[in-house]
Length: 326
Length: 264
Image (spheres, each protein chain N blue to C red):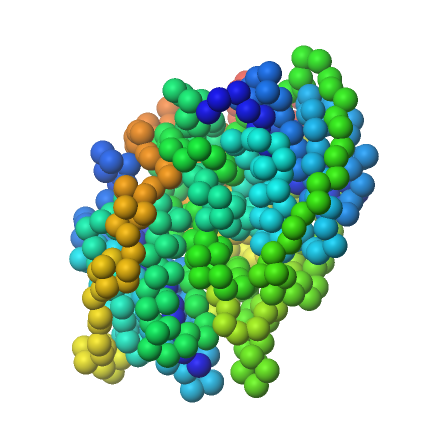
């Protein structure tokens, strides 16, 4: 890869603020782009002005605001927009936050442009002119390094892979409207309805630095889980059993088919650690497990494991943390 | 309604899964099986076929043993199977696999039009979830990915799905022919019963090569891959682990440990 800008898709909330992992991607992009600079892609009708201060702090030079009448929530339309932004920026590397919808756009972009695509990456470097991605695979049990041999690389990056840091000097991001030629085929899918999920008041599960998870052992009572999550400033997650039982919403389900998390700290309470769940959390930095069953498989991967009653251990830990924090 | 279900042969997730020196998932360890998440796609196809008088083809691309994946589909109740088997396919990335599957779906479409292409939401080995959108792109079909509900109205030829994303829920629809990927929340896959297992023995399994499909071997497999695994290593076990049984102060000790580790 020569000195070309790095392009980052700027995922944002309805109020125009950047999703937390985007700052991590911008930090990563800045390291890789050097003097060529980091450029953003703004997809959606939301007001980019709300994000400009954060983009300036990250040193973003240009924001390509996709100008189209069609809904960019359709992955084919987003791919049309990213294709236009690639051409406009001259970038050879596009970074997206790892999410199902971004992976859809990434796959389309790769088929259309001949780019190589790597998903769920937790580190990136440039070696001998090639983008080399680091990722954890097979439910967190293996690590790989994967080089992109095509001239263009499309990479989806997991949240919490890097620590977001502001640029040494802030920039004055230029917002440029980018006309998007939407292919006729891109609008064959109709977006009949889209409902944004209401925030929980806690950090977003997929990108939280701390996640406290309740499983079967809670027997539906998440009060201890929520209390510890709030003391730790973390998000609340759940196992498939807990969501299937209706104890908590499906959007809280962590696992290889639900939300994949890799927080700095994962606390599993009453979580057995079935392989389907481990596939969604095993790349976490530090793993704490509290379970009354000493044979629970989660103890095989726990850094700190307690065989005990979660309704005794969690409140005691929360109380002690409050005391220590004064 | 003619339905093609794309399925993958993967190592059983309960087994000790390995990557080989080439960085590829070891698939000949004897622990291979039909990707669990593809069972939901087969189930969806069978349910639709029962409702709308359909014909279900299960399609896979992979090594010799991958035929086990389509056999399982036949045992569940699919009508016929296609196995793309060619040494040149080995080492394909998701885009290469999509190229081969697209050619196979087109090949099947030459006999009679394919109305619906179904896939699972991910392969439990790679978990990239790239294939459904890449295949839709390669086939130039509208895609309805990640369906947690699925309704087909054959009278007007419309397919409607709902899906859950990280920050939103969506309802999408498109007219046939379409590609749909389904989640494991859509349905409960049936188990093959004795009758199904016996019946599957008489069902046809067609083996096709890249030459049969008119695919240039240089565009797929390791030769056509746009990514290359440089290194793969088993993660070392976690160190300095603490395991204790609560005798009344485990919560306090946990709090102290978190503070000591600077995790709060």
